[in-house]
Image (cartoon, rainbow, N blue to C red; front, side):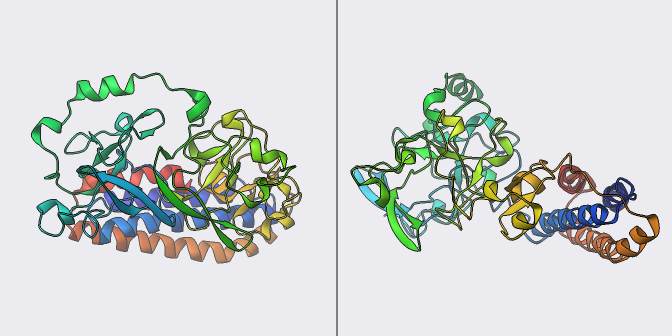
Length: 389
């Protein structure tokens, strides 16, 4: 039954992609390319789940890790009144962060346990409630004290004392705090970093690595002022004084879409590349003007296709995640063509979709052999409607 349902999901998506564009060849093939890539993405997620039944990665879907992951540099953590240097992306994903850094490790049961920072207001269906972190005193995420969780990473919390464990009422009180949008971004497009976070991180500027604060992009601030080499002169560019922050492209609902960042090419937030927004901070984006590598400056679909980080939505060039992952590819208009030409052009895609279905069966068998119940498999598979359709 489970296999049938997932196959039905894939089949319906393939059929929808085909039927909605049968009157035009180029549009249909383009749409099928996108549908196929989305199916591959869904199967990749499914495969990851079948080979690793622990939470791993960026936490469970009901309690995602927060903060910027995979950035170079260090952040200073306070442990028993002493400072210890941890990676700058501390808590940004599920890892045994203390194993090689904490003075008591190895030697304690919690040293090898994975954990990450989480948003207590968006954390549910986990074995234990998240707890406030003591590693970064005074640090906040979207205006609320930083919390951590072992449970979302499939780990057990033997680190916290009993009197440190929180109740649902404690979490509710924390989440009721009013958030300052001038600092943490507009309500419909919050900043996604953790601040304050002492330390430094490396930023790529013209093929050189430049030191910036470890919490760059975590709040609305003019981050380049005093840090970017071009902002030290007598007449610095206008963008030096403009506030911006990193945002989640799929949670940002402002009229001005966020843009891809090239400061940290390998960094991510919950597995997605970093995006930034001046608009959420009330700032003006003069930074992107004239930059040949900015998606928004590509005026045709051909120009847009030359940049791997970009995608054309039928009207404009945007970051690929906005178009292919967050659902921003609606409204594309396609030229007309005849049905026979479509049939010929679509043939390779039919075979590719068939292979995708076969892969789905294989991955589902892996889940079943790993001890997943049909209910658990469906809980994983059904949300993929939003990814592959």
